[in-house]
Image (cartoon, rainbow, N blue to C red; front, side):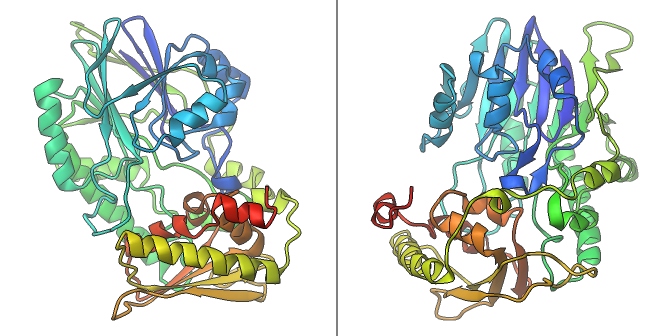
Length: 451
């Protein structure tokens, strides 16, 4: 079994004369708000993927589902495996770009292809902290594969809680045996704390890194893999918000190494991201071999950030001639839709939500204020008898408009292209998740002649 880690959750697995590609992502995601890192010669990547047999796509987020690269690399001609989701958005997107052979696996189904056994594991919680939320979720997945001797578990960025890991470990032990190697997140691909303006972000960054390392130690103690490498949640912020890169809360490989050593974790840490490979051999004196599959064009994060600091976000390139009066009219309709859904689904919205719209969402040197003056505000009210605070979302007016008319998705926009203030600083998952319902229906878009 040979595993190569390129970036984020982009991994290839070569096992029993079969090659599997997981979540290939090259370039931008979240409408230009994220850029993949490290960066590669795309033609070299495509050559590496020529002999791929199967493509696994974990979920819909576009740092995992890169439709353009799937087409450009001709991976659309390969077999795909995905979870059999209740909502068919993922499979429909794949079919639209020309994928013809798609296996929809049931959760925990043991799928055999050649001499390889694999399963897709479902999302079990909406967040890794066991926080309550009322919005339905059926999004993330994880992946496990065996050659009959070695077992590789790829968490992707599935937000398992501690209890989830215990259940998962028991299932894997029963159905696959001991995990040989695991790819686990250390940290999360989150907008917190760097996109939040009214908090002590350096302190919060340090706290989150320590918390992430503590959780990593906990899940390694539960899963007990022989080898581990960190994967998932890595990106850079391009464009005018690029100064926020310094505040992203992701532990370094050295911090991970020190944490595992200090906690006496009996697991071998590997650093593969950047085109490195590990080959696990059968019956040899040296059970693993490390090698470099190929070198990135840019593996220095500071240089990569500088290369992309002048990139434009999607909304900056869209022709979007829309008046504030029109946005106000559309918001009132979308607000009614949002209220209808949260009422029907009995979703608790614990905080008020205020949107502040700008023509230029650029930060000052201290990174704590928007330089431009706001042009308007909109508010969604908590539906609880006692409101638990206020979440303020600062957003470009074009980005706000594109979300209302569903040309952009709130999830991706919230995660990369908005700035926040939260009083008190408490995260209620249902508050932001519910914004996916703040949209116009298809018939309402037709009424406004919006294509």
